[in-house]
Length: 59
Figure 1 (cartoon, one colour):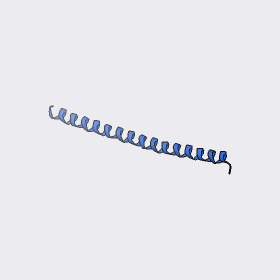
Figure 2: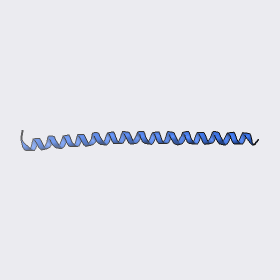
Figure 3: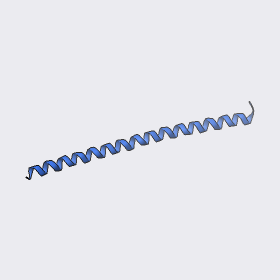
Figure 4: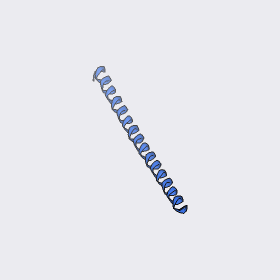
């Protein structure tokens, strides 16, 4: 194997590894964003129910 070939293989391996790491990071980030959005929606829903309950008690 020539030095150029070894360098090319190493570069390709490094590039594939970096792309794989980025994909893992990206998927984790998307999951965190979705989880955060779900939590905010649940909090908003809970507040809406509390407000609705207070409104009924005041009627």
